[in-house]
Image 1 (cartoon, protein in one colour):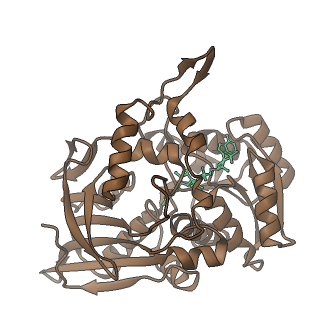
Image 2 (image 1 turned 60 degrees about the horizontal axis):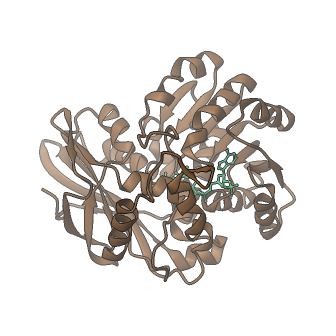
Length: 398
Ligand code: NDP
């Protein structure tokens, strides 16, 4: 039994609150806090659980966070606000002596560049304070790293080639929308591509490398090589990996909109002066795009995210594919959000459970693949994200 403070009341925060409230024997008290308290109140009213309370907090402000944490005294702070708030929330956790969990690595507001270096720099401070920080505990990053750790533990003596494949074959019926925070999403997918090969990072132009891949129950979808943050920690934690790549599917309509948005300057992250007021183009764009948490109605189809791995077991080459498919309709029926928020929120709840039950608890700052994957994999099957394994199959990726 433990007390958890959830920060962020968007699509992901909604699912985390739903899933935690279902398990009062694990999460005895939950406080959902965000910049806009009304959003927390609306979620709490939908869930209708007596152990879920709400609060307002500006997570950019360390003293405000410290005050809230001191008043509530949680065992764990779960950050599902934005990556910009990672460091302020970690600072507040250190100041108040509380452990930390998040789903996306820190990114400075004025530079579209995500790396773990800022958060890894907290290792000694968390260790000294006897606190645990669990980084990247959504689906990808998150389950993608746990799948890799599970494969390394049970299926391979040596992982050599890792391809994380992320397909959203859903249809939300809108001309253009992003499945999670539009600002973070557009910053991520418009970056240059990058993958790991033979001990170095290879850079590519955005969306330069692509090929069709076949996804279970979905079929063939054009998949684009992009850089994704878990690659950075996985190649360090599994040093036998010779090549690690990340593939994501995009529809032609999405890519066309993205190109226009970039070409007309609406993806810009530097402030511009508009009629005497400073505005950031991508933040203005976010304000007019559909909200991720409102996409769920009428969203049809499935996501399919997994790891395709090639390596050595008992002296022989072996292939292995572990994946989950998640239905947008089923996610919406259960939590009122679409599958992207669902596939992120469920692992957050499980990660928090792992911490509270003492299974994932060690002083320091860790990526998810540094913990035992087994208890986490077991809970995925129980809480809505069942996984499937295929061995010695064609991975379609040389
Ligand atoms: P949303 O934009 O829907 O929600 C973000 C929430 O954070 C909003 O409620 C917002 O408040 C709140 N917030 C933003 N800034 C602050 C602040 N300064 N203080 C307090 N609250 C703040 O995003 P999502 O729910 O889609 O995504 C949440 C996180 O999950 C993101 O970091 C995203 O990168 C990550 N993610 C991770 C994935 C994974 O698989 N690992 C996949 C998808 C998302 P307000 O409503 O007032 O704007």
